[in-house]
Length: 242
Length: 242
Image (cartoon, rainbow over all chains, first blue to last red; front, side, top):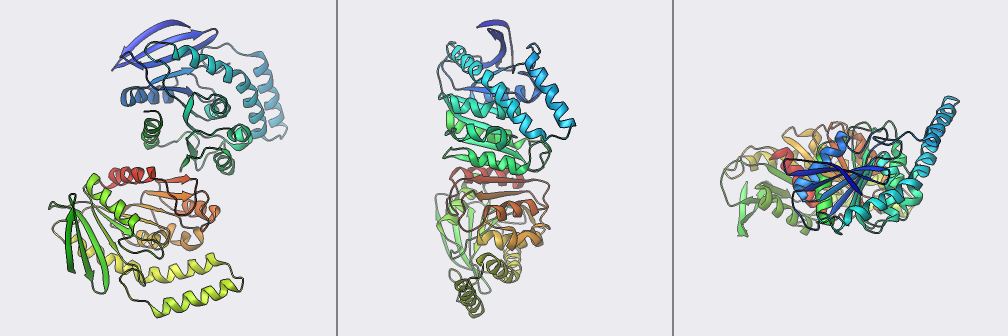
């Protein structure tokens, strides 16, 4: 793990790093000591420092005292294009143009990417938890949209994760892995999501094997999660990791 | 309005009252002055001082400084049996025994009772808001199960209500009135509700005309709303009435 920059503002330290060829960012309070860690997965077409990631990460740090890490998904952010992924995306677009349904193609594609990101993210957890200002505290996961599609198999595979906020994803992509998720989950649904059919969202919530899971649905389109849900997310993680 | 008893414990004053032939209870902080008021509607077979009502009311008073009122629904609690309601209940039971569906019968019955309770509850609001230790502050409504079936038409009819927590109710009983509800609503669904079919619950949430409405669904049967939802209810009312 190699740190490439460090800045600090309003009590939040931000360190950019690379782990092998994975570019990442770590936000922490300006204090040493073991603390809970949230790993955040960004959305499709976004990156580790997308505004929605940074805004949430800063609040996890300042209001909960947690550490937060995010990394670029392959072919996103500071990572190079991936020829195989590009080829599949082009093929999928051609199939959709020819009348194929988009959702099953996205589901297959996310499953393929998850086979790469699950071990990558586990390696990031290993490395970050060895740092003195993070340590081996409880781990949470936050991810919606692509961050849900990649997050469900990650949470299912990684026993260090004790609680997860997921959402804006459907059963087609994630139901199989969801049946292996047993930790508490807060699951976000946008009632008028133009990308994920409502029944698909509800079916993914249904598929989670967690004894404690809570679905929060709000009116609005895919990207319109209301502000007050972040307050709820903070309390959810504080309750389960704090 | 006639007060019949007053007690006080842990900073919460409890006054029993009657308004005409409606028996009610009012909980307030031990301070004078105008404050938000929550009207609570109890569940079927319950009464104004059911444990679930009292526990929530005390937290609304102690944590938010609100006043809280609850009254017995006709044929519940300290109110006499009602011959017409009894006759309908007996007839409905006979129909169900003969193979009729229960849900439409309950829906019709709740609509009938609501024609009595909506004006009763509005009269209670009038009277309680004239009290020096309550005053004409913003009003919220809380009710699930029967308290949702009677609450939806009440919230639709009463412009003083600025926010409502509803749930454990279905579209069959309440969709028509729900289309006239425009205030923020937090709507509780039990994912494995043995009394309200899941699709009916989701359809009632869908029918609410409110621009801000948030659905919270949790695993478990009808009566098993998790503890943490009360924390959420407190924050919801604090946000909209505080």
